[in-house]
Structure formats: structure tokens, C-alpha cells
Amino acid sequence: MKNRIKLLLVSLFVLIIAVGCANNNDGNDSASNGGGDKPVVAIHGDTINSHEVEDAICVVNSRFEQGWRMVFRASVEDAVTGESIDDAEVKVVLEDGQEFEMEYGDHGSDDVETMLYTIAWSIPDDYPTGSLEYKYVATVDGEEYEFEPFDVDLSKMTIIEGS
Image (cartoon, rainbow, N blue to C red; front, side, top):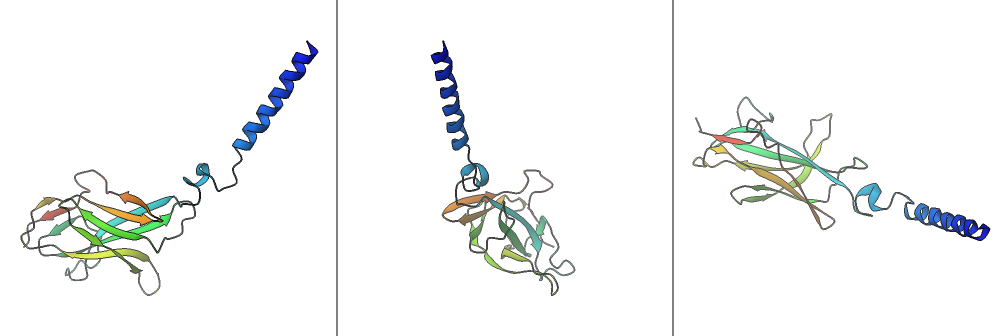
């Protein structure tokens, strides 16, 4: 009986050590950052009127007239550290299949530096009206990440008839 208890206690001790070693979290495993040394990527984005839209310069907007110039903006960050990822390959993809490569640069005022990925798009005068779905696709360290706006009609980008 004593030998069985000894064997049971030794087995339990070995099991505890094995489980403890398997759960050792040194900050470099998938439990802490989603995949080893790869960052956990967060993409945020919006759309604004360009500087060419009179009385609405750089205003966040989801309604654009045919013929207007608008800007897609996105940020790509390491979600764990909050640091910007400035070497991602970022593009915006429209539901009609058009893709636009975005460029990283300063888009803040003189006193506030905001680094964003952006691309301007001049909406053709004859572009179909209605909602226009789009997404941002960022490639970081060979992995692709996507951001899509809310799937709510009032939030969707909409092309309206030009004036």
C-alpha cells in the first residue's frame, strides 16, 4: 500500500512539473501574441473628403458625390505594443475589383504628427451610385490582415449622384 501511495505521489509530482513546463509563458509563445515572433496586427481605417472638396476639407465622410476626390486612410499597428507598423504593404480593395496601393506618410497638422497609409481616389462622373463595399488589406511579415467597415447601411460608403 505504501508503495502505491509513493508511486501515486511521484506520478502526481511528475505530472505537475510537466504541466508547469508546458504552460511556461515567457512572452514569446502563441498565447501571448498570437503566433510566436509575429505581431498581432490591428488595422483601423476611414474615408475622408480630399482637399479638393470645397468647404469640406479632410472631413470624415461616408457619402461621396460622383466626380469628387476622396481619400482612404488606414493605420496598421502592433496590437500588443500599440506601435505603428510603417513597413506594411497596404492596399484598399473595392467590391468592383479595383485595388489601390496605399502610401505611408505624415497626415497631421503642424503640431500633431499622424502617420497613416493613404490613397486618394477621384470617383468617376459616371460611377454607379449606391453603397460601395471596400476593405483594407495589410501584409505584414508575409501574413495578410483585413479590415472592413461596419456592415451597417448608414455606415457604408455610398456614392451619390453628382451635382
